[in-house]
Image: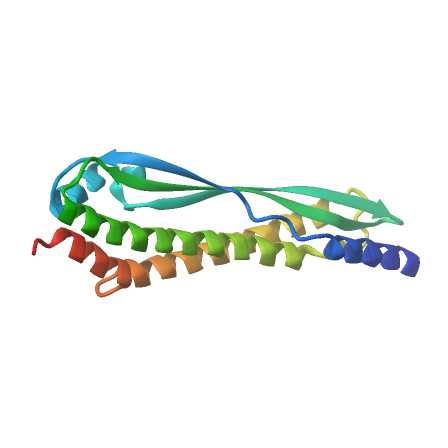
Length: 192
């Protein structure tokens, strides 16, 4: 039994020593908005934004895991769990703007991009943290590997739920009254 545990630990060590996965490619999409003033642009965003106008911009992701298990002597080991991650960012894109409005839009768009890029970093951190938490998982007396598969799935779900809470807290801080994105949106909408 000790030999099996040492083999599983060696396999996990090799997996950890492998080069880190490259950052996930981020696809960018836009949706058209219209208007010549900040308020008109904001109203257009509310009408045309993804998910019914709940967000000005959005970062979404798809994450699956390629998992390999090995059963030896009645125990089951997770050999590896490799994430397959794709990320998509969606931003509003206005038509032609006058010089003043274009400058104001560009300032707002830069802040919006910073916000969404932070979501990308949080997604990548969640994946990396979850992957590290899976290393060496095993369950004794699990000839069909059903128990360890459930344990791995539960750990992946825990990582996802923690990410959702973190992401929501970040949005609340940024977009709530007085938050950075709230102030930037106010600057865009308020005529000078």
